View (tube, rainbow over the protein chains, first blue to last red):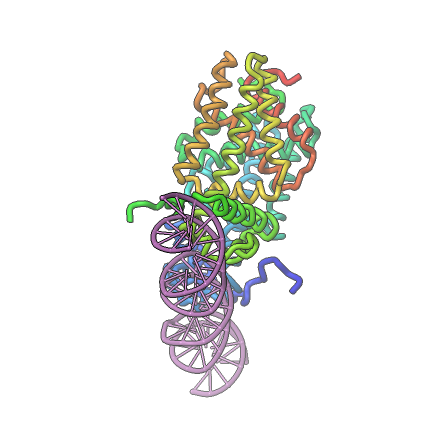
Length: 205
Length: 205
DNA sequence: TCAAAATACGAGTAATAGCTCATATTTAAC
DNA sequence: GTTAAATATGAGCTATTACTCGTATTTTGA
């Protein structure tokens, strides 16, 4: 009654084969979403593509939405871990270098599978209220906020709003690039870099 | 067979009452989308809310998608006409004033019915391939491109890419504001203004 | 006034797709 | 080897919902 959120997996996979099954389901879901869009994205199709029975699918996912949520969450987590690694890896470097390291991660993530990225992006909006997803968002947000704070820059609209805007600018340009089918990652990076740096009051070189 | 696009209305309304019916359907669709989301957005619900029989609905819309498409298109056209009016109304004014006039329109559009704007935005992505919608997009795009060209500014990435980015920045910040439920239109405008002006290499006051 | 066109009606159809459950198979524990 | 738990199966149930179609009503034009 109370919960509008995605229920937890019906069964915790404990044996190795079940973990494989879960993985196959998520992989299949991603492939279908990428290749067929929401049209072909049905639970039966996912199970078939995963080489798994529909019954097995529902042993680990309480409903279709949970599959999508898991997919989106995994994607967000992957991105966040990349950002974290980039942040750690550029420790001590000047702000510009750190920003570039983060941008590289975002753009690599976008360019790797652009069509899937776009589909996941759309689903992400629908599932924006999922607590687990929100948590990852907040973590990524906190990471960028920390970077901005550490930069020592005087931010145009305060720490919070400026972080929000930097996020919005990066994602806005990225999404639009995905929508337009752009393929030039370097050019995309240069434009986002320019937008962010100038927003922050830094003269882009 | 060939057309993946939205078919034309089944019947052209010629009498006054049918125009009222069509209007009631679109209004109802918007209200449902706004109040219930995609959950309650069914053709039967739309017809009921419009005070119209399901048969009448299908007399003017060949399928559900056509209703959504009409809704999205009308919204896009309204925005475009607003931009056009703002552009005309600020003829001769300096670039900054013209930009502000355009931003006022975008933000008013966003703030008027934020929840509906968000839903329409999401549907807009799904229907991005609709030719009529693309035409309106292109018209709006052309309008902004012209403004940028007329500004005489030396654009950071050329006319085309810079226009794309300005669009992306404005929509990115706007969408994020909608997602976050922001209500401060003036603050939002200031931030978008800052983002765009600095992107264009102008010192925001 | 009257026929024809336009519009409105809504019960019913059809097809899809999410999901269940009774059963079978595999693995783990001892 | 035996048992119990975990996992896998897929035919089929069920509910939803987009959409049709035969009929009734209203409007128009002459």
